[in-house]
Amino acid sequence: MEVRGQTVMGETESRNFIEQIIDKDLAEGVYDTVHTRFPPEPNGYLHIGHAKSILLNYGLAQKYGGKFNVRFDDTNPTKEKEEFVESIKADVAWLGADWEDRLFFASGYFEEMYEGAVKLIKKGKAYVSDLSADEIREYRGTLTEAGKEDPNAGRSVEENLKLFEEMKEGKYADGEKVLRARIDMASPNINMRDPVIYRVAHIPHHNTGDKWCIYPMYDFAHPIEDAIEGITHSICTLEFEDHRPLYDWVVRELEYPHPPKQIEFAKMYLTNVVTGKRYIKKLVEEGIVDGWDDPRLVSIAALRRRGFTPESIRMFVELCGVSKANSSADYAMLEYCIREDLKLKRPRMMAVLDPVKLIIDNYPEGESEMLEAPNNLENEALGKRKIPFGRELYIEREDFMEEPPRKYFRMFPGNEVRLMNAYFVTCTGCVKDENGVITEVHCTYDPASKGGNSPDGRKVKGTIHWVPAKEAVKATVRLYENIIDEESGVYNEDGSLNLNPNSLTVREAYLEPALADAKAYESFQFVRNGFFCVDYKDSEEGAPVFNRIVSLKSSFVLPKKED
Image 1 (cartoon, rainbow, N blue to C red):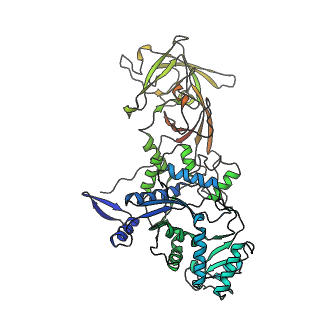
Image 2 (cartoon, helix red, strand yellow):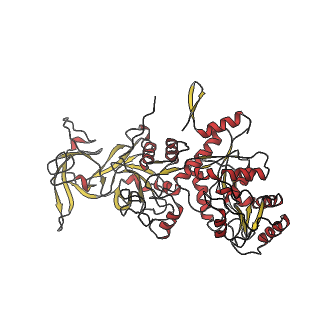
């Protein structure tokens, strides 16, 4: 990507190619302001790729002191729902893109679009066609062969006006007639070969009800919406590059005084995830995932539910950059961003995800004490907390082995370890049930080692976390892997999704009592287990559910900046 430098207060600031275009337009007086928009279709939930568009459009408006619109391109009532409208509004607001009072709907401009179509008919630039969709496709030609003129292209202006009015009045069935723009059936760009700009559809609209039975096509509606709203730079993804001549034709033929400029950038692809609405809808309908906000998905609602933050999404989008070339980002980079955002912000608590009871045989029965622990060793501002400690605790099952391998420094008979923020303990053995499953681990403690340090200076190599058995909070914990089997690829040979059977693991865990009052969307670092967030949907009072946002180990290394 070509980037030039601009000096700002003695430093050189990198400018992406879109900013270079905007700079040139402002310098040459093409526009005297910057006005951008995010134009989602309300036919599904937004995903991580949409976050890039939202933050790019909003960021440009902020950077240049301009305006930012959110506008729903609701021109296809067959797929649109109010549920999707509300979810999109929530997602955009959560990301921090403030549209203030600049929320619009394409359906609010249906009258102007109809008038625009009439204007094209009167100019001889549009006509009503009787061809079916298949016939139109056949007449359009191929990339190597020019199209054939529509048999109805010779209709008079008067006849076209009459037929188009009758389409509006509901006199024709769905698909019986369409309105086509008259451009050039020999154009090398197939989008310019007399595209359909209006179709009949007797379907109620979520905003306009039964008022309309004809609806504009997206390629006709979108430039009109931009022009009406005064958008200066209509920023969209690369698949619309071949549609730009039609975009420019519409605003030119409708004679808008300050036509917007369409600019295309590369989408953001994420490896081994599902973003296609068709596939997500299938996963939802078949009950494979828990709705559009299932934490295994990368819809913005799912990322929010899992515990990602707006700051982490913004960091990820910035690392990906803005380019004209398609590329893919590793999911590990998204995980890196959430770790970086949370590591100094959130308290580090103890939680045991696969518990086995630890009994300190020489600790006085019936007694307990309160021990102090820092909330985050890297951020003293988060303060300290008190944790109850007694004779019976829970530890992770993997922290004890009867016959350990070399360099295993946790609990085994005869070995001394540190209980985090508590005491040194020496393992004495274990108890098993009739199936040989360990049910209890036993140890003794050194009362002089309170706080995890021995007064005689002896060292231990292992430190393990724990929770008090009596006061522990029982909780459901969900551990996630990618919903796609990464080793075998995203799709099977038949085109179906190659699902990972281990994408969700549910554990019954024990947590520190301080987590009893955790609220929905609150997040914490569980020592050694990762970052976790309270699930807003399934948690109940006294029965919290925690989703693992990300583990503590990262496979992503941030590239070094070039000198």
